[in-house]
Length: 443
Image (cartoon, rainbow, N blue to C red; front, side, top):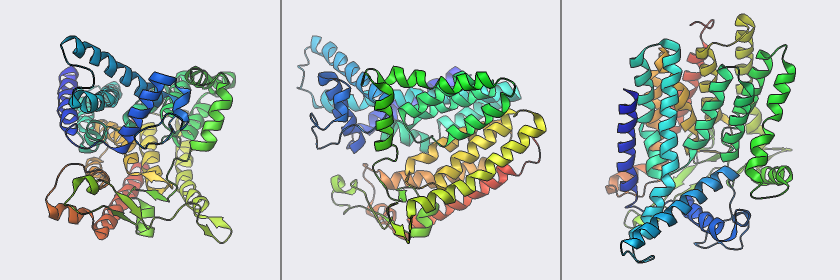
């Protein structure tokens, strides 16, 4: 049954990927093409400098694993081009091969990561509830969620990859395999930093549950150096120094707005707008800009907005650790439902409260929520409503496909954007409250 579901999910994604190739590529994809070319011609390290850039793009600002994913797909695309040359297609003569085919190759890792996450969701649920139907439902509502399909298959973003390794980290945490948990978390962060808020949680739970094995826990912490060294060595002979320097310059991302296109709590407070041009020219409509979202460097007296917003986020997240700690004391360990509840709560709160969030960063919450639905936790309507709100957010930010004029006008309406942000925030907080309301962990 799982194989059939995964096959259908793969076919649906393949159709979307080919359909997406008929539209303008996102600027991120243009960057990846450039980084893949530079890595192939000059080496991995040169992608982090502006020396060989074309297309008007920027130097690489992503961790090493994203670079390796992009460059490997670029290499496979070149090999496929050589195969086509045997059949008489002269290299450089086909626009489809030169442009669209590379876009398709760059989406393959995210599509496969989506399918792998769906399989892991199935395993989580099947292991706990022992019911095939519940496991299939849980994996299906993730695999066929429009947010997930749009993010990976249509848009071509790579959030699925780091989320896959984060989910693996939680899997190993449940099994009390802390070295594996820490190493897979490190791989997630070496792909993208968007899930860094999970690191304190995984460290806290593993530290508490490894009482009497503190040496093992310390070894687990040190194990994160292994993937860092292995991943950075192809770029620098001094991997620790290089990675530290990379983090200090790139960890906060490019956009320092308090909300970077995310319809969350900060969007509700500051009421910014997403702007795009006239509907008469689709090449301009997709050039979305952000207006009215203050920078985190904005000073309110002696305190920056970035510090204020971070403190607010930490204040809201701290009770989650207290909640988890109490359940650790009650059971001397966490059952799967409690651990997955905490995982979902952190993903939702991070999106709603942390500064500099992007519209795509609600994606992680749909993974544990799908698992919880499989466990029988009544959050189906919350899952559906959050999916609808986030899909609207994604569509407004990236819409290279043609729409009727009235749809463009509606998407451009700042009041609609604010209401979607308000609904997302209210539903998010409601879901968090509902998930924390459980009195004691039960199986």
